[in-house]
Length: 564
Image (tube, rainbow, N blue to C red; front, side, top):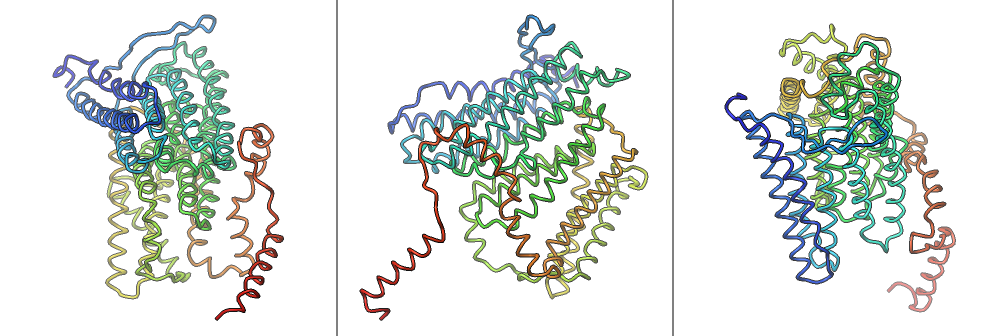
């Protein structure tokens, strides 16, 4: 196929157009006038559309054979012994992520037109949105870890401005400052990892890192440290427990900003893990540590999510749980599955935030199955059928999970997912409804494993091919994940009715407050940025306010002679 299309650089050129157009659209100064607002938002919307068209054109030229990486220039770095290339990675992983991000940006830009209409600062918003989206597209297409790091640093600073868009909201200011603590720490980890990789490999290109990691016998200490630094950056960028507080509290920003962050920017940790996966698998302890932190995040965030009453807070905790799930998949070496999860969840989360205004209407409707708590028997039957469906689907695809611990982990993940469908379906009284639920669960299991097989076929050449899955720590992580998922399923099912009422109340209270781990971050933030909040809120005494309210109500009753 390569002979069909002699211009191998064309795909890379199309990819370069994507961030360039958005960054150019953001350059004109924004003014608080109606004309400037209309001009800015239309300019950014068309730049987003052009980026999506360029992504689709890049997909087409790639399949026609233009598959060469694009190296634009190199910037010498005196004293470091290596250069910073301005290169674009042309492979399936880049094209999938670039198309996904471009599509999400178009949806957000279109939504922002109506959402921000009438806001006196909508021109500035459009400009910042274009900056953030353009820099994040640069992150997605970067062909080396140096350019990736520069792009994610620029994205972070631009996103910080968006999170503080309403500067008169103290909570928005403090949440943005809290995010900057972890973002700047993660950026430092990436800078140090970039320097160590440059010295150890002699190049920053992702392809060079992969070739070096696959051919070297014993991984140098400097690259082992780089792998741990990358894992640290993934944990901080992905808002893993106990560093998740900023992701939950940045909801004071406009809804399009929440959608951009939760459906795109927050996946930068998973993206760098996928890009450097050939290096990470050579340091299995770091990869397993990422998996353990991800599993802890899944368990805690999934439980906390069920206690939230605010729609955006519930969605934010859901994002935290899914990010932890991705890190668990990365830690288990299921890289194609993590990519599938990233794409699916990004599309879902963009839709969830952009349609969050209609969730209240949905909550008013009574679910068809009611709010019954499933019995222990139906829950156990659902779990058993989930294992049968998942294991049988793996057998259909020619895999024996008992021979490969990685497939055991995959079967467990799919089994828990389809068992949740069955648990809900078994709450219906009609036999036809239960049979329908069984059919849906079986279909979803087959589709999930089919997509996994498709992603393995399509992206194996872009990520690490193998991981040490027969070791004791790996099997321990699989066993711990299995137990944790079953515990979660039980707590969200029959466990709700079997726990003592006092224990349920205690768990609800502590989980609703996120186990209080974010308070120390609040203290640090207030110590450094209290004077920058702009508005000093008085400390409230809720008991005193309640008594004052009662007194006021009593005075009203006395003056009116009581209720008529």
